[in-house]
Length: 312
Image (cartoon, rainbow, N blue to C red):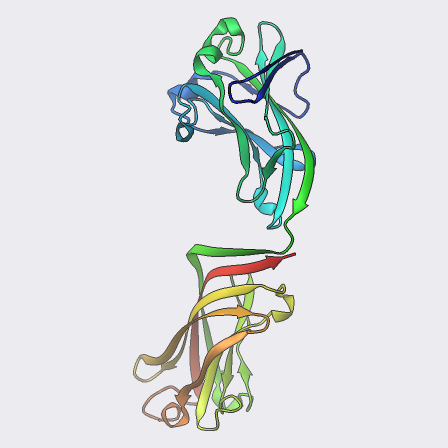
């Protein structure tokens, strides 16, 4: 086995042993460059209890100013499945077959303790794995008849957790849902009436109507709130950022009374809304239509914009 150190400090070796964990054969490699394929990802393979893939930039990783080189990386295939704060330290080798001499050129990362893979850094490797000039010269045996063979070996040296970790996930496109609730007012519970449960963003919700107001407000008002319906299943430390609208429809005049709010819902703060949503004087007006023929019609617009979870 020949050993040398590359200009980047990474260890370059020659080995007759094939890669233990994955081999990638590429036919008609030149078509990748002609078709301007900037990034090619292999199928997943398993090593050391995790799933990985090889990532190749046939024309070099332009973002790393490696346009005259072949760029090659090892990537964790599904790092999002790792708990927040979980880190995997892995040592690895990338292989390239010398077809003329039937051995492999390998490049090993210079970090002897291994590279740290986690949710925010899923990919490590070599911006300048081999120059395109050296790779394309058939006398070197790496690209022969427009065919080449890559490989990988991966070994996990340690796995760690940072302890308690907070993860805030804000959504670019909010998860939205409209829920309608129609009921006979004379049959509602005197203390609190609850709508059917509906699902938004993987959580269960309900509307709460207090026909005589919540405690402490005094009579003469209707209280209306949005509430989490699965508080007992909510992990400790989880908070859900919700923008919502609650409205009571005026069934006679095609209008409505509504309230809009934003709130972080949690197990300890599971409901939010208005203690004085509408007065009895307005609600029971026969010309308003908020209550018509003993029917009340309520609608909720719920949009989830983010969620915070705490681990450890």
